[in-house]
Image 1: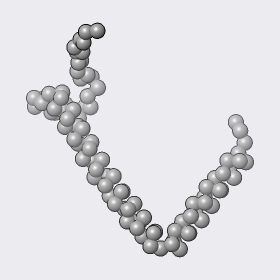
Image 2: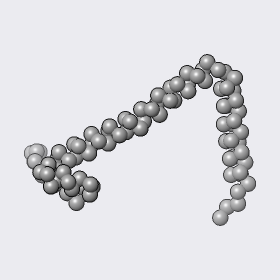
Image 3: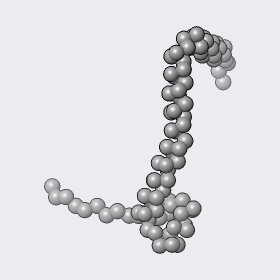
Image 4: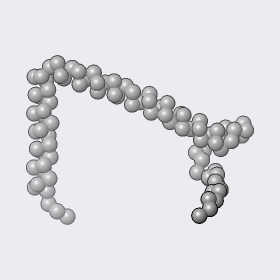
Length: 93
């Protein structure tokens, strides 16, 4: 079996409209795609980083306060039990 080269077709039609300025300034499709990927990764880190840090701090605090952890278990259990009861008595459409 012979290997054949696969021709890549650039998909300029699926490009976000806000990258039009970069195309006017002379940046290519590949550079725009790299820029968009780096922008997405940076914004994801800025949003998810504090969420992860807060979850770690809350986990540390809950492990040092077992009474609060017990209340959390009871509250989440009551909420899930209430949702289960509501689902059990719901009429089917």
